[in-house]
Length: 416
Ligand code: ASP
Ligand code: MG
Image (cartoon, rainbow, N blue to C red; front, side):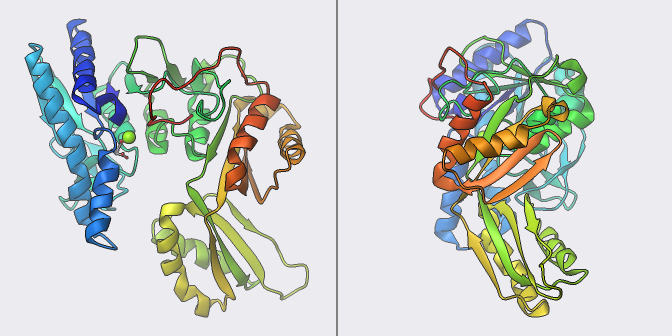
């Protein structure tokens, strides 16, 4: 059972989560719980760091950020004990979550779950601080924003859990962000592949890595509301979903920026140098566009999108290439947004791209970049037009439902 930040934001909600955990244990189940930091705690800690330092040291950042989740677990263990059950809280390191050494976005390399297993065998409810681990160099690491989902899936795999329940402040995975699209519908079942595409294209649904991990280890995810008992969304292998509609969801992101390199030489190896530089800096590149110049020997421009948080790092890392490749300049544009149409049914239905582009055109939305996978079409457009684009596409692909769902909670940790 994993509870997100809003689900443990104050004493009342934390107690509610504790009751829910205890109820599961009373069904006779062994329960491992992963908690996120409370409310906006992680944002607050990040702000604290930037108040002290312009460029906070990544190792110290991890020491700082990992505290948020520990607070949640210690408090919840107290609440569970008061409800008459045995409980123990563990840091990521105590829980045996071993990661690589990349601070602030570490990857799990091993889970040594024997301490959890021992505690379960003693009839204890085990609470594990999400989003963190211990590196192979014995330092505390964090797993990137939203990383508690990955902790939950990794532990579910390690202890052979029946299901990994992700409790959050929305009833499940939606066909679009209900805050933008009033007719967005909760999906009952969605495939790993679709959720991966959704997570990669900005839906706050689940951390991307958690879904990759779940798919690779065969963990069933049930994403559901922490405020009621209703069934949420099951994330399962594609074979287990029924006949797919053409389009399942429209997701969007405004957390990216576009970097353009002007005057990239038209010669073998140039793109490799650029991509390697970004990879060495651990920057995830999403869309990449480059066109062969029409006239031979002329330089080309190359654009790609990266997380907006990495703009500064990207510029610093690419700077030396200016002289090496004789570039005319490096430009960053943060006023862009990305809208994606996703559906496994796309594989067998031609014409989806035509429809996407036509709908955007009819709404006077200019497309700046395009990328596709077998089950996704994404466009980069001006940031301020993102909500209009999402609504128009959701309607055009007949995803609007009759009942409008309005977020009952004041803020939401999971978007679409
Ligand atoms: N607290 C961390 C964050 O806000 C991790 C998580 O919530 O999953 O990103
Ligand atoms: Mg969170």
